[in-house]
Image 1 (cartoon, rainbow, N blue to C red):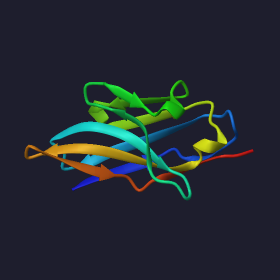
Image 2: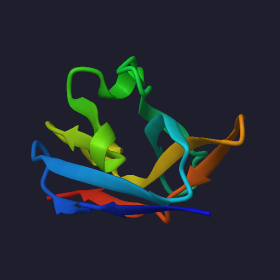
Image 3: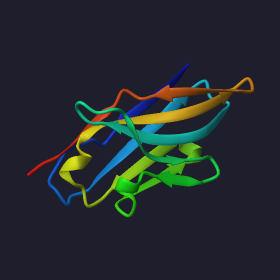
Length: 119
């Protein structure tokens, strides 16, 4: 079994910054793609950013230039630095990890962390 533990959410004013962290632990042969998704009230979950084990990165258009995803492979941890936050960034942010075990890939989700951008 694999666990994803997120931290770093909270309340911030527009224009402010937050940094999210997500640490993976448990039975992991290889940690492939990791990423962040978010879900605002009444909306579907959407991709924010992903990063592969080799460092290839993908961002949603809405966060390009403001958010930065990174990972520490030695710590099985992915980060999301969020700058210039806007009220529309308010959502529950979920960590996602694709774990390879026994030559198969399995997706895992964190429990979610609330990010609220408000004055």
